[in-house]
Length: 347
Image (cartoon, rainbow, N blue to C red; front, side, top):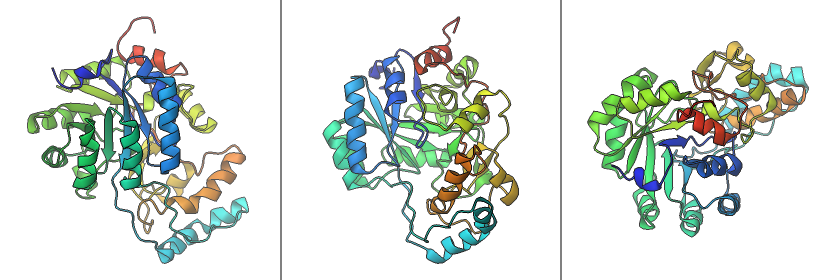
């Protein structure tokens, strides 16, 4: 028995927090159905976070995981952004859009005192982090109201670091996972391994519960992760086809068509490696581009291109985050999808 059992979940399945792809509706649907829903906070300012948490409580009294990023915000770098815009210039011309003025283009916020103050009011049961952990003083504040703290590890070294610095459970994020890699100790992508290799190694290396993530797209992969010693699993991509997700129609069509299988790690959309379906931008510039501004500064330069392309019905410049296994994406309500993942027959 672990503290995860004390959450009162019907099934040990956590919905992965997916900034830009979901909101309160998906989180509440999963929690109400017996899983642990997650609310991504990285793209919410304190006012929006407060409103989202209030909306969640109006929908559900069940436990919630609030997720935040722990990256160090880089200083504005107008020169790097100007160089990045120069690489994108042919696309600006193609769509007849004006490049935005070089600016910080934050896009995603690191966890700070203002966000912590909002969480202290709402006191979510679980708080999870990506890219490490916040400063000790902030982490102490989170733990002060009894929240359980999760964080992502992509290597055994990161898992040990997280346990030593106060994480109550480790999310072992395999290379198959969609969205941003949770790596934080270094940027060497050769250290990244698949879920089936990572989970048992992390399980042996730490004493806290391990949550498997990456490539878990159906009942059999849920069972496999549990057989490897995971106390629970975290699933993201398989919930993207649900009507409660907020992805664009092009993204949804690609996932539900049954043809979306080719994914790659790319830093073009944000400045940090993340897995998504291969797009025109990734094919033509190479998925891991040279001279891409530091995370998350790359995002702003693509915003007008993405808007113009999507208005024309194209996803060429949109980040279509997805894991390597998209076969579990189904256009069914999140509650039904959760029960299917848990192995209920006939769903």
